[in-house]
Amino acid sequence: MDIGVDQVGEVILLAREMVEQYTGANEQFDGLIEGMNEDQRLDLVALVWIGRGDFEPEEWDEARQTAGEEGSLSVAEYLKGVDHMAEHLEAGLEAMGISPREAEDSAIEN
Image 1: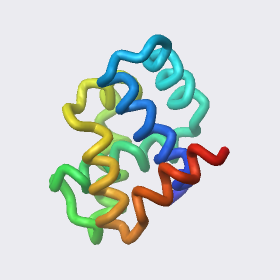
Image 2 (image 1 turned 120 degrees about the vertical axis):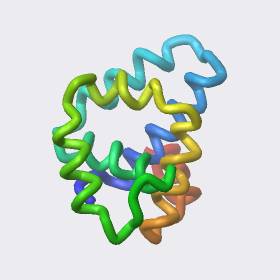
Image 3 (image 1 turned 90 degrees about the vertical axis):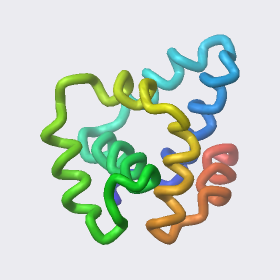
């Protein structure tokens, strides 16, 4: 993965803040995604899809390739439209052998 686990943790935390409708969470989320490079954005979409069960962890490359071909919406807008985004990202991390708790803790520390 090209994206750091701390970055995924930050996306998860902001996704929860958006659900709770915290002031400024949407703008922070958009800025975070905008500040990522294309590979990191594709990783996020692939993680969501793996966490949602659309792809298996062994299909990582295929998930990323499919994410790259989707391109009709911005990644930020796409992800904001995914119900239970935070939970899917956590499940995606787990499926890839990464602790979601550590990712979130790492995001808080940075």
